[in-house]
Image 1 (cartoon, rainbow, N blue to C red):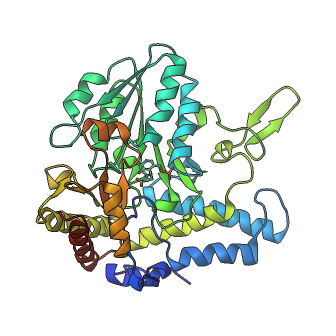
Image 2 (image 1 turned 90 degrees about the horizontal axis):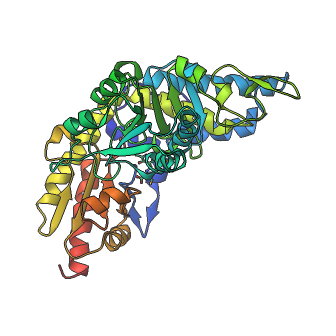
Length: 411
Ligand code: C6P
């Protein structure tokens, strides 16, 4: 099976077998791709085919199966690199965004000393907050947060005040998974580099949805997850500029990441193996590569335009329902594919459960962004997130399900 070029978004849905399934005799309206996306047939087939025809460990055997597995795994790095305009040796396969950020907190953390500063934003997912928070506690570093303004966009003036000559790391998400705000990462990269700090981007919600060019954005590190971008679970990537990956310490020690080992000491393998200790998720990596290739063929700019159109339409439709509050930046330019909302008087979890009965899959809760929810004085929100297989019909179903939830709760 080959990847189709320039797919129309409507045709795309046919590539996702799970979307043909009926639950309670209803078509699945899948609006939770920010949590995890569905997988196209070609990714599913690639993984099955690997286990049926190629399965062997990589970088070890001299026999045919191992050679083929090694080539496919290395090609997968190239496919993922191509999607973000990186070089294949700048792509480290990890188990996902969380693992990539923890790797950085460990490896960069070794360079930091008491009094150094880390700057994050108030929009971070726990994965890009807790590793830095714990590092700061351990090493007595100063941790500060760039504020979110009233209009729910990032306060760049505040960023300028916080980032100073003691700042060693600036880390931000690219898109808020909780309220959908787009972050001006190019500007933050400039501010970080002016003081010679590293700039790290959590791309979990951007790489699946838009053109992310690491050279153009000039980010030092970018973390993202395969399962949110049509790939399998348990695989993701850390991009790092080559000279930085060469400089920093490995995170895990063991097989495959070494060059030479004596009883006393060891030297490290070349990139990306230096950071890929042990037998990796080979089938997952190969599936991830095919997912990246599929996304590139579908065109990230078109995906962004499509999902943003859907999100804007959903906002309008939801805003027209009495008792519904939609959150997110007031200016559409700063919004993405994510629409967060509440129905007055109904807990987000209850809304999500009723929507489920109508076949509509959404997430309700704090979205792993508890400090942000506290700041916004919210217990949680209902979140609909759109992807390339969604359509305007899905939004009409969402709206009907929201009306139903209001009826059930007499609102
Ligand atoms: N957000 C959501 O429903 P992992 O779990 O490692 O693949 O991704 C973590 C992560 C990091 N950063 C951002 C911005 C994210 O959105 C996520 C995952 C999911 O919003 C699950 S909490």
